Image 1: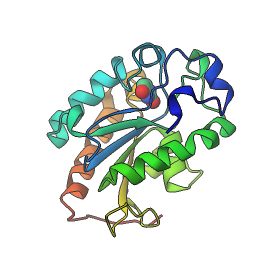
Image 2 (image 1 turned 180 degrees about the vertical axis):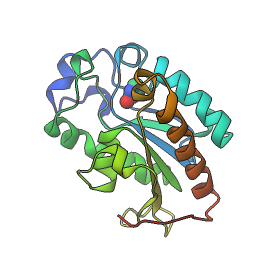
Image 3 (image 1 turned 90 degrees about the horizontal axis):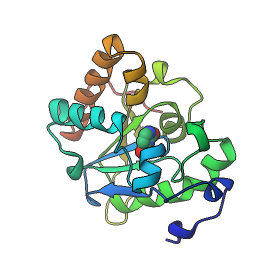
Image 4 (image 1 turned 90 degrees about the vertical axis):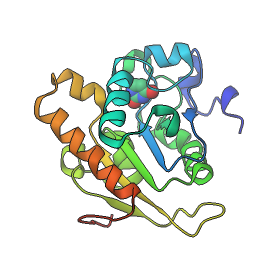
Length: 194
Ligand code: URA
């Protein structure tokens, strides 16, 4: 794909590097964040800053996976200036890239971090506090060599957990990761279909 020279939305003019995605392109677990921050924009890699460090720790502790064993991407591939929220037209312009990543990686489970990824993939306008705590199914998206869809496990964005100083949000995020681990082994607990 032509993503490195993409100019589909105005974010191209302020980015340093396109942050497409990293990790195992055949991973069972795909993680989708919101968009690159300052450090990611410089490095060209998602979740390399403070929130990435928390994500790495929680992944290892609750799912027993290292980041290299997952595939990590964002809703928008270029940094919104000043870390502002991505605008609806920016999300829409970038959406085909994420859809293509989902098709190619063909994960069993997608862990969404924060409001933007959850709303986009579940197709809901609810806030992440309402959406998290449940597992959703997307079966419309069939992988190249597969007849299965994927499970979506929404959780908080790690930077929101850091801002909150851990506490209840951190405990809930840990519980969500345990939910993702259970979904990976395909014995699903309380299912809720989107
Ligand atoms: N926050 C995100 O949503 N994605 C990143 O890659 C880094 C921080």
